[in-house]
Length: 237
Image (tube, rainbow, N blue to C red; front, side, top):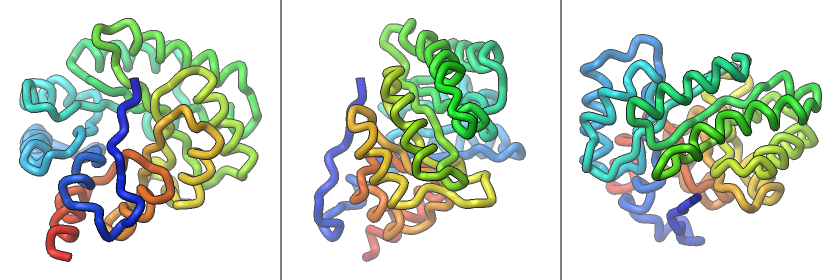
């Protein structure tokens, strides 16, 4: 069910509208307020962003605000650390979907990746995927890998597991790890390793040049809290 916006190979031909359609307009701070969430939704509708991404607390408010607009509502699960139990992640996903989430961004269990515990990783992802696929229409599942602290081998291991379970998109980076967010090298590696999945880049993306470079590397979604500034920068270029 993965639908990807086609990005021109030449970054100079990337329009502001094309870039906007790749953006998940994000507000995940613990201090986010109802007023700020509604403003986020208004910006997403005005600029034509693909989705807003909010904490579970705000899914119903965002879904009500964006109903019929064409802008999707994404909610995070087990974010940003990924260390919750499978039962907890399933419960979070179920609540988000009931409240109107169109997409789930689940943080993968970092310990399982570091230890090479494919059995645990697959079982947890499958449980959350089952929640997403039980809906009609099905809810899209992105599995987020905290890529910055991982070795190449660990990134490959995680990407293959996510593709194997059948998730729609692999997210690279959370923006919360001190090691940083997704790099173009991460995106290219994930795309090569798991070609059946889309790729989402996250973490510290603040300029149109950064976004364009990540899209050229193979990303089809960009998660950022600076979507408005990025699109306005490209419009003025």
